[in-house]
Image 1 (cartoon, rainbow, N blue to C red):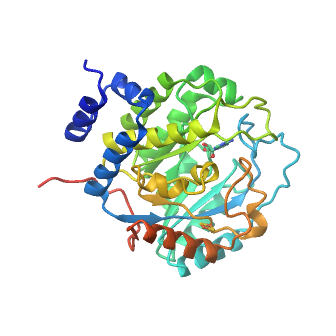
Image 2: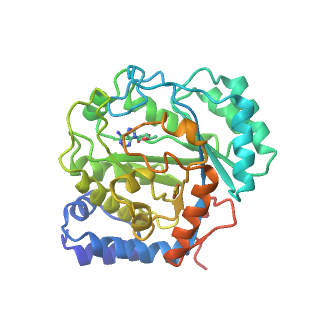
Length: 350
Ligand code: 5AD
Ligand code: FES
């Protein structure tokens, strides 16, 4: 195998296939710019200049899990908990539609208060608005996922976080990598568009394990891959910092770019965590392979409490402000906001 950046990038753009060792080589290579500019080229060819917006509604910060890195972990007593009422969630979705969003993402901690009855009510009410619905509410049973699909949910986001089993067991006590993979399999089987992804720069994570994560995401294969840098949260039990947060930003860009090269037509969001580490983070991500942004559509009173990690952006902003802000930013780099629901359209060559 030839290990040389130019050779690997040429191979990637002609075949959209890379071996795990080639992915590893790109992750470790010094030159991020060359990789991201190839990804930007591939993005333009396969998914164009349009950017899909997804309105993020963070409807509950209760969580029964205890992931060491996450501020919503159940043992974080510093966090003031909230739940948005069912009808108010529907109203937020209505407002999002009025702002021109074509998709809402309903996200929460793993909160059993929202049982199947409540969730199917919320989903079916929002469905009447003729917008796409993405759920990001964690691990559920096959039957629960099925009920949500039948009620009208279109997509499901469940990040694998890491495929390194030792690391997974350390960071996600009481959970198992195997069950998470089963959940993703069920989501796929039920016909949801599958969104998954990882955190980059977790303490104890290696380049080798990230290369395996990328291979795993392609093997599903995902319709959407969300990549976010790990950001240390002092209110969590993960009492050690990753090496350099700036590196997490750079490495996240590389992971996103590689995903674009090997899955050229999928949706890749420029994540909020990228903007936390760099004030232009989302635009840089959009120029490194990403084609989606998920602006916050939750009211400001709740935003501060959805503190997965510190320094989250837009904490004092209203849904309307974020909608206008992001469109201006997107236009400033010669891209435009899509008018479609932004489903994953496999690219067909004629
Ligand atoms: N830093 C960055 N991202 C985090 N997430 C959880 N905790 C952190 C953190 N400390 C991510 C996880 C989860 C998503 C909603 O937020 O990947 O899936
Ligand atoms: Fe919220 Fe810019 S996206 S202020």
